Image (cartoon, rainbow, N blue to C red; front, side, top):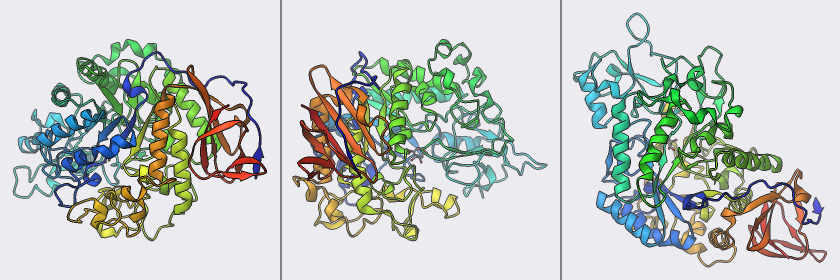
Amino acid sequence: MTTRTTTSAAALSPLHRPGPDAEWWRTAVIYQVYPRSFADADGDGTGDLPGITARLPHLAALGVDAIWLSPFYRSPQADAGYDVADYRDVDPLFGTLDDADHLVREAHALGLRVIIDLVPNHTSDQHAWFRAALAAGPGSPERARYLFREGLGEHGEEPPNNWSSIFGGNAWTRVRDRADAPGSTWADDGQWYLHLFDSAQPDLNWDNPEVHAEFESVLRFWLDRGVDGFRVDVAHGLVKAAGLPDWSGHVRMVDGETEPADGDGAGGAADDAPSDGPAGTGAAADPTAAADPTAADDPAPGANRGPMFDQEGVHDIYRRWHEVLAEYDGDRALVAEAWVDPLSRLARYVRPDEMHQAFNFAFLVTPWDAARLRACVAESYAAYDAVGAPTTWVLSNHDVVRHASRLGLAETGKGPNGIGAEDTQPDAALGLRRARAASTLMLALPGSAYLYQGEELGLPEHTALDDDLRQDPAWPRTGFTEKGRDGCRVPLPWSADEPAYGFSPTGRSWLPQPADWAPYAVDAQTGVAGSTLELYREALRLRAELGLGASAVRWAEDWAESPDVVAFVSSAADRADVLVVTAVGDTTVTLPEGHEVLLASGPLEARDGGTVLPADTTVWLRRG
Ligand code: GLC
């Protein structure tokens, strides 16, 4: 189908107008580095901090404003570093503290800010606190830093409540059932401890002031070393509802979507009551709650979240952290990883005195559908503008199937939790075309955008990994039913003709790279017209030049309700309007005349004297 149409200058009401504030994080493009898979300097097959530092010029040339590093702390790597044993040191796998300092200095010298990952919901079970808690026994102050409880049943043989782990299986482990129990002082210990993720990731007790003090100290440790901010892992999970009430739902990662509970639970009924705030932090007296512009949109308590998530008390923690960051110069920032919906509820994490950004997973999980995309964009601006925070945009990260593959599946949206060789394979060409279109659309939208390493190469998911190489704990914990996240974590290809595509000097790679990745390598795409890498570079260059991240936007009138086109106009006082048009799905669009093509995610077609935008393609046009 060809939609022949023209656009008029008549404006619809604006979707978004920029606010008065101009801190860097309001418009930044932030690139996620997953340290174990970015670049390996020492040749052991696992990426490291010196490897990242050596490749920083790639990121500067790409044109991003900042990097976010996934965890590099000391860790037994039970969950790829999201199980932290020492928050003040670097794991030898990744280097040393000096290497971290060097990385931050070099990044700053290149004009790149550095955000690091903070994991406050849980520690590793090898953290000194947890070792001490096991040894000290029931009733001890050491155990009070975690969530140890007696079991139910005559002999305490049943877990304290019915919560399930996000990685599958039970959320409780009995101390005496641990592999390290036999022969230890806790060999006969009947208590249980809570872990919303793996049993090697015990949840901390945020009702304990000691936990607050410790994390404030960790923040300062890294702020003093010059980091520009923190990505806060599972930011909605720290505080649990008082009494840890039963709840039979199962929360899935990233999307915040909750499989329905079977109606038995308290379901987080306490979460709008202030009583579950951490000790001494005064949730009950929260003055901003009453004035909260988003409060009217709150779902019924527990409607879409359990008693372990999105409790009122978490906001007091972030208010305090906001104050800590504000003591430092340079607009340091906090970004929430919180799978909370609706967006109006998520926006509560970025009220003026809390965090600065929150990942917009609603955008990531939106199916490739014009009306759904428009709705998500409009809801995002409405929700974040209401609290004066920037909207963020994200399409991929280390927890989801890469969008170049996700968008090549018959059903688009959140996608499966991993893809294996025996599963239906994505259509690679379709996925890449849509991914380029989606990213080109995303990078024109005002706000802050997150890129996941490799997406600038159009990298697909590894969808045929050997099952015995999988390392994600979700794979065994789901009884080998969910493939997990390894497929999006495969080391990057840098050079088409080198072993391990130049990822490591020895050719080693902790996960094998597919044999057909040479065309995706950085050196194979550099300077090649039409390559995905050059598309991203040009998009970022133009985004900065035109100030797209800080512009006003409105829907383009002629397509405002189109079933297969998303089109918006980006305006700023000192330049001509930019019209962004995405043909979503099985359609083509005849572009209006008199416009200059600034950027296109794929080849345009000349037809009948006009220019046609093919299906699954985005174009940026400068209005004549
Ligand atoms: C976050 C991380 C994920 C990790 C989990 C537990 O969702 O992004 O990778 O497994 O938290 O820390």
